[in-house]
Amino acid sequence: MKQIIALLMLIFLFGMNMPAKDDAGKNDTTKTIGWHPRAMIGLDLSQISLKNWSQGGDNSMTWSSRFNGGLEYYSPDGWEFRNSLRLSYGRTKFSGQDYRTNDNELYLESVLSRRQGWAVDPFFSNNVRTSLTTGYLYPQNVPVAIADFFDPAYVTQSLGFTYDKNSIVRTRLGIAVQETFVNKNRQYTNDTSITRDKAFKLDTGMESVTNVEFHVAENVKMFSNLRLFTRFESLSVWDIRWENIITGKINSFLSMNFSYLLIYQKDQSPYTQMKEGLNVGFVYTIL
Image (tube, rainbow, N blue to C red):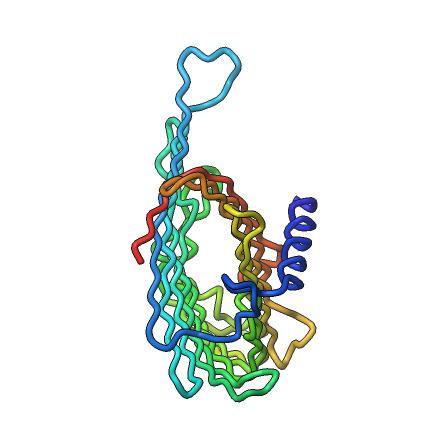
């Protein structure tokens, strides 16, 4: 796992130092005025079936689905409004067991900025992170619900400055307010220093978000998103979300995807959470 992290870090830093080029080979500093929608759906499948197999093993069936969409607007007077939505949901079944959820997330982000002719531009952003449906842990094969839609949900607003001068790297830093909403899962909002049971928590601090997106090869694309958040009362503790997706296009409808997600968020777990997957599946571009 350490080797994977080191490799992704190298690719991430390599992408940040690549010059952005448009089709003519010039720096991409202009945007087309108007609305620009995009949407893509994908389905990955994995299945193993064994019969009278002397080398051990078990039958399994895994599927995962995803949606990546966005809507961007560029005005003649320098306003830019970017919206992105990512949905993912998947399940796995082993012989003799019920299906178990292996992917379950909604991520919605909106960023409004205005070009001022400065090195950086002012922005306001809002993002929402939550589960699509009920998520479980399985201690001793007994399902225990630990998350659900908006239970918890993390909603963050940020105001600051963004650097967005090319098509490869986008980064921003701002003062942020983060709201945590829960229903039954009060462990995500409870104040552990005192006895308190509440369904809402408000944190103020700073947020940094960096996106790197570029082609590693002609048919291989890298996307990386690094989000950092710290609270003013504990500046030495940072929430980290580092998402990486490498997509290799086989043909117009087949692709191979490697994904790696690292999360450190103390109110969720005292340990660093990691998830990685390698899939071959179907991809269809709607817009």
